[in-house]
Image (cartoon, rainbow, N blue to C red):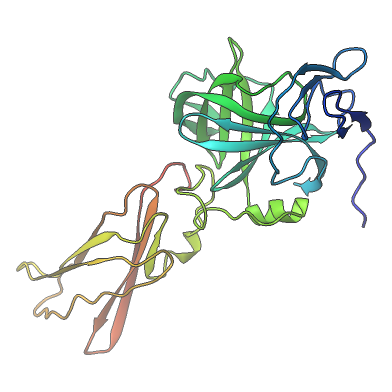
Length: 333
């Protein structure tokens, strides 16, 4: 079955600064266009629709998703109409503005660790200065302090006036597998609901190269990213973001008289399993409880998944248990 076609909302124009042709994909909706050739900012609200308001000498950079590219996300056909790069003093990310004449606008947000799709919400879930609140039955917890994010680059067409250097305060909350982000221009609160999108789904939708996602890329996962190691909890090994080393200490106490076996080792690079044998011990008399303790020092945003195997010699039996050691943020972590 052929995918439904987007309703026509395009219009061909020419940049009044460099003469570069461009197409408005959301004609009648957009109020601003930034030329992808020369970086000129064009006001689309005047009568001639092409009044130049600011001109930049710097040429536009190549985008991961070129303007005008169409793609299907969550069963809806979108066209990429704009791109903004932002920086808050700690992290840098890109926001691709998607448009569909029947569904409005969405934000496709790219960070080194992966992608999210953001839906603007008109409601005010909470005061963005609180530490936590409940949203749709889930507890949302603040993950980032209020910071100032600055527009480093703006290319394409937008439904508001935007330019390089614009700054706004923002914060984010996580819970229930989603992120709620809030930008605070002046006294306004603009909320966006963000859902995780696998990088291969974005690549397939827009016909681009797969940019990859955490743990292969980025120093840490996104706070609403499903745990990529949840299916491997029974596998002995180490998974770490930065990890070429981590320390583990085992202490095995298997009788009331204090007999112990202990050891430590340095972990291997990410996704490489390693086994460690504590040795043998003898337990006589009546049955006694046994305790296995593990202590890891993986650092922030790292995981170690451990599998213990206790083997008896007579009769030949095995008892298997597993334990994750992990540190991260978010409900699913």
